[in-house]
Every structure is written in C-alpha cells, then in structure tokens.
Amino acid sequence: MAGHNKWSKIKRKKGVNDAKRGALFTKLIRESTVAARDGGGEPDYNARLRLAVDTARAASMPAENIERAIKKGTGELEGVNYEEVAYEGYGPGGVALFIECLTDNTNRTVAAVRHALTKYDGSLGTDGSVAWQFDRKGQIVIDAGQYDEDSLFEVAIEAGAEDVIADEDEFILTTEAADFVSVQDGIKEAGIKPTSVELTRIAKNEVAVTGRDAEKMLKLLEMLEELDDVQKVHSNADIDEDIIAEAM
Image (cartoon, rainbow, N blue to C red; front, side, top):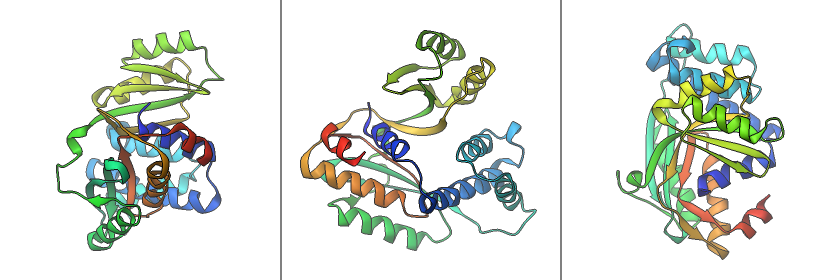
C-alpha cells in the first residue's frame, strides 16, 4: 500500500482529539468556502463542494458551520479570500512530497512549510519537480466489519471502481478522478456507507524508508498536517512497518 495510505490509516487509528478536531474543522471550512466560491453553493451541482460537505459531515462538523462556510464562499457572508497553492519537495531518504494548501498569506505558508521540511532533513523543490510522480485518484474507505467482501467488490466494480483492497479492518476503493462521484453514488445506492472519501494523489512508484529516516518521515508528515494552511500532504514513502506499528 502506498505510503500516503499508510499515513492516512495511522491517523484514522489514532483518532481525533479535541485539539486536532478543531484543526480539522478549520481545514474543512476553508475547503467548503473555496469550493462554494469556485463552483457555487449547491452541492448537487458542485462535485468539489459535495465532497467537502460529505467529508465535513463524516467528521461530525455541525451543520451550521458547514452552511456558514458555504455562505462565505458564495459571498452571502463576509469571509477571507483563500488562495490555492501547492508546494513540491523532498523528505528524508529522498521521498517526494506534494503539499496542497489554502492560504490568505503565501509568505507565511511557504515559510512554515520550509521550516518543517528543513527540521526533518527535507527541502523545497521547484514547481513540477515531483508532481509527475503522482496520479490523481479517488479513494473511498469502508468498514470491513460491516460488509461482505465479495458483495462489496461486486458493487464497487459495477459502480466503476478501479480497484478494491482489503486491508485488515477496512476496504479501500480506488477510482479514477473522473469516476469518483459516480462510484460514491453507486455504493450509496447499494446501501453501503463509507467511513471516509477523498480525492488524493497516489504515488506511481514508492521509495522504501526505514530506520531513522522512517521516524523522521512520520514526524514530518504530522508536523506538516498540523499547519492550518496545509490541506493535504501526499508522499511516495513506503514506510517501515515496524516504525508504523510504534507510531500506532
């Protein structure tokens, strides 16, 4: 499984404490606002906003917070004007990193990202230096304890999923970015409720990271994702399972 997926699983296993939930809500509010600004305030006609709203609801964000974020995006309420920026760079062991941000101050954001990278033996790269190493995909995570694997596989493939992976206590459905919404619709029509959905970037090839580099890589990922301006971090790190186990 790709390094990014391993990191995502660590976060799900650890759960979300109150402090991290507040940081998560900040990110989800920004995404909802920008999605509404760029594509309108109706989730049924705005795929990006629909994803943002579904993700916010899955994270138990209050409905009034979601509505307020959408109204800020459509201009019904005053709000901050966020800019979408992405930074490309390298982590310990030569790992590729693609860092997606929403910010109202790019100078602040790039300084914070550079600081995190430098602290854990990483560095910023130039535009295009690592983006080519990732494919844009949809991922849908489903609780394996709630559904039969064969039935789920049949529904997922029929809906247009590219792949279904059984990983311990969860199933991970991968889709082409263009099929992401239709696959969600298909599994929901079959009565299957995802635990999380996201558009992500999956590495074409992985870089094995072990020992001290693996420890630093996990710390770097956590530090980056704790930054308010950072929305998502993608890496091609295949992190040592022993280090993963210690982190969990």
